[in-house]
Length: 188
Image (cartoon, rainbow, N blue to C red; front, side, top):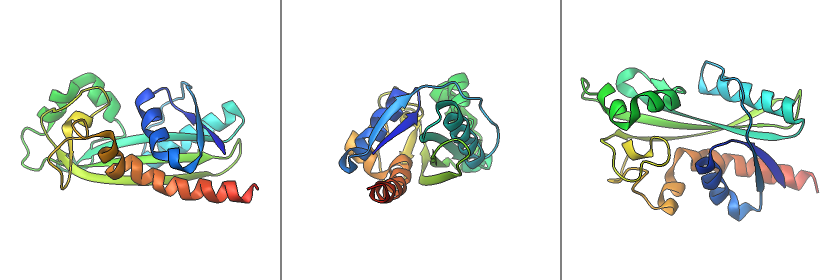
C-alpha cells in the first residue's frame, strides 16, 4: 500500500519511514505549501489533510506536532515551530526561567484523508517529559531540549532506535499502522 505523506521535512519523513518500514507501507512524500490554520492540533491537522487531499486528489497523510509547557498551560503548543524559529533552543528555556515546573507534553497527530470530500481520521500519540538546556545534535526541531520522562537523555542525544521506540510520533504511528493494515487487507 502506498500513501502520500505531505511533508517537506526530511527528518519527519526519515523517522516516519523508519518506524513504518516493518509494515511494508510505502510513503512517498510531496511538499505542499498549505495554509496554516490556527486552532487546536486536531483542527490544524484536519484542515491540512482536507486541503492536501483536495489539491492532490488522492489519499494523503499529514502530520502535525505540538509541544506544550505545563507552566504555560500548553503553550507554545501547535505554534512550537514558530517559537523555535524565533527564539531558538535557548529562548524556549528562557520562557520557563521564572517557573519551577519545566514539564512538557509532546503531541503528534497524523491525519489521514482518503481523498477529496472524505472524512479525516486522526491518530495521536503523546510523550511526557521535561524542558532542559539544549543537549545533543540541534538538527531536528526541539529534540535537543526535550528529555522524555524516565530518561536522562534528550531526544537529540538518543539513538534513533531508542527515540523511535518511545516518541510521540512512534505512538501515533502505532495507531496509524493498525488502520493502514486493515485498509490494505480490505482492498485485497
